[in-house]
Length: 403
Image (cartoon, rainbow, N blue to C red; front, side, top):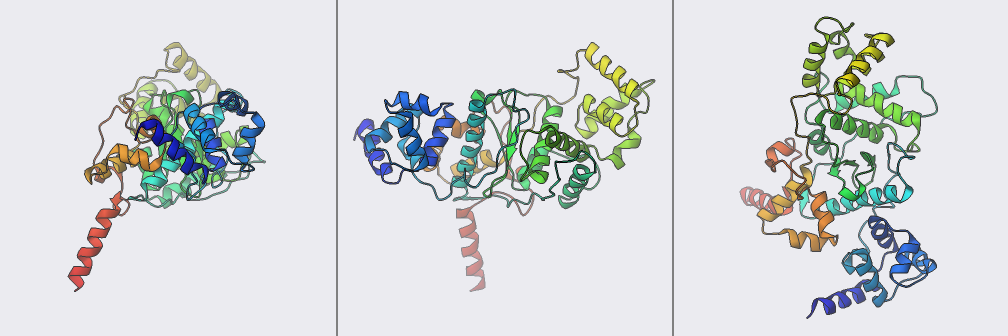
């Protein structure tokens, strides 16, 4: 059977189980408006809107055209066990004014696709359960210590009351958060996050290669997941609260206040450099924290930031660590399944997603500079990746022992 015949046959199969939400997802992934897609398939925008809403269903021939126009397999449009879009909250983007709605939709569509991939892989691999604490913080006031108490709660429940937070991406994955890098076409969007009843998600910017700033980004997005499940994204108060959460999460006031210099004379910069490496935060974050906690006066803070600018450190601070933190959950899942004879092509076929986006989400693109780590490094005891085949084998062994 030729590839063209195979595609047409699949389109005919999919037409009967066509899901309009999948068409919306595919269109947004491609960065297209309804009118753009309508022009590509020589139909009206009204027709595209009707297919997406479920009011009408496209013919098999049109499904094939849609798949070709969006560079997806026809099977992409088939109904799934779960509707990721319906189960997800609005994403928290840093600035709603710096990027267009079209670009934000494209970025959010990729995040939902990552959940789709993870859900598909979970049919054969057991991931850690999600246990992100919920601590809603009202966003109609600036006062109060809600963000700080939320950060303290997470540190306590996640078992590290004292000291610096370790590998943040690993920590998030250990607690069931899906962390992925966005594809290059959405690199203009900074890190963002959204909650899903399937799995909470944090999407990191692939261009930002600063270890220290990336960690603050991750903590900031964790703050949104913890505090802002029902909050309207993008507001100044919401973003300020996420920043305060991140600062307390990474630099707890009661632990770092007395360590930060009270003046910028003497060995202050050397002390800050040492704290930067110990706590995994930028010099600028430490200076801002020092002012927030009352250790530095406004004048001293402004003078220190002026020095930062003069030395060219606004965007390129000196630091010992060059490699950013890398996600491991999905890459390890793919690696584990390959060890059991299920190759990448089979997984892509199972997920029915564009191969390039599958490789980006699972960290198997050239952008992944670090080698894969072992499963014992990836997840904590009791939460490691376990294939369903391995689980079945252990169950059989246990049953045999009991006999």
